Amino acid sequence: MGEHDTPEALGVQSEWIWGNDLETIVFAQVFGHGKTLIFRFTLDSKQQPQSLTTRIVNCYHDPTVDSASATLPDRPSMRTAIWSAIAAVWAKCSEQPAIKDPDVIIDVYDTVSTDLPSRITHGGLTSLTRLGQLGGRGCTTLVHPVSNPESQFVFKGIDFRTFLNLYESGHIKEEVKIYYRSVELVSSMPPHPNIMAPANALVTICKTGDDRPVVCGTLHALLPNGNLGDHIEKNNDSGEQIPLSCKALWCYQMAAAIAHTHFVAHTYHMDVKPGNFLVDADHNLVLIDWEQSDAPISTAAPEIDDTWDVEEIPAEGLTTTLRYTKYTGPERRNMPENTPGNSGWNVWNVFPVWNDQCPKALELAEVFSLGRSMWMLLRQPDMNAFEDITRTTEVVEDWASSDDIPAHWKKVVQDCLKHSPNERISLRELVKFRDSARHEVKTNGLSS
Figure 1 (cartoon, one colour):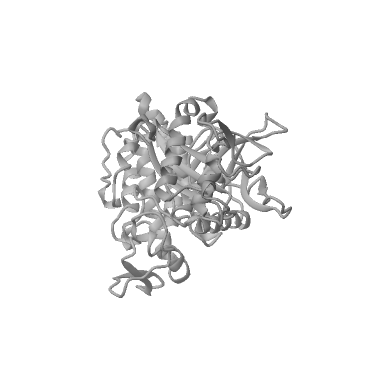
Figure 2: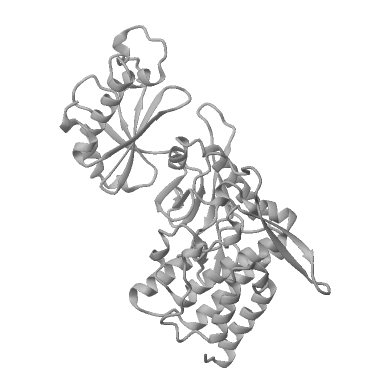
């Protein structure tokens, strides 16, 4: 392979190669010019042993072959053949409009000539048409049913690209469990106007030759106004302040959703941040993303970093207090070894432990996350500034350019953000305050 026959010569990075369990396909992924593309080499069904795709597949999976011409000499030769083939078709394929679709796979199909044909295809949800990738964990995609283009939904689940992205790390099985658990949680949770409703429909797939359906995703109503993080960024870009009445309402709705989570559903969210509150058609907030498997560094409470244990002990009168002790025992883990992320909760997740042993500690941890999220809404800082932080303590809550925010609102936010959980405002008190504040703005006006 000459220097001009590689993806790198085209400014493209070759990433990884893997195969399927049936030993009939080899996939290769490359990244370049803002695109991640997946190429597929398939064993020739016509059994042409000298075709390039067949030799690549046979070399990768190493079955018994009748002739040396049906495979390649070794793995380095196979990699050379794969990357040369991709380099040959990259320019033509990468400029096609369909390449922007999130589920695209490029088939480099069978040939014995030097001219390599290729075809852009889409991974399998045949009854849905994909319109574009949305944000969020895993696959969150705007779709419409093939039979009804006017009805748009949000598909959330495990699609082919999600599988490929997580296959190499081995985390895909855990990701499927997390997804199923979130569907079950939302379906069984008592309804609340500021919490996402259960899915409109389940999306299923079947293996080739098997008519038993397997749930791979869900369809949800499309909420057209984006998420709260988007609103903050949009207003910052235009130099505008979100109206105080909206801030008052949204702060209340954030607190109300988390209070319902803890006191009615008796569970937790774990991923409280502006980006996980969608804005519906009536400009109310709806809390989404119930995977309960990761936390945002920018809003995480400092005590959830995996170094603390906690117990609730009696205090004066009928009250209790929390006693935190630094963990000094052997290394502990309740998350899978291949869990992505470098935070303490990716190793030892205190949320399920404290949910069973000390729910008050979880309540106060999520009060902190609410306080940080409310500060982001009220203060409207540059949201991009939080992308590179490695610890929640790196965020400094200043109140610059926020003279319109009443002083008592700022104080309650600071009460949420106390480093000691025992000094924080309770979740019930926070809901009560935010409810009063929204009515104050609505009925009487307000000054700082």
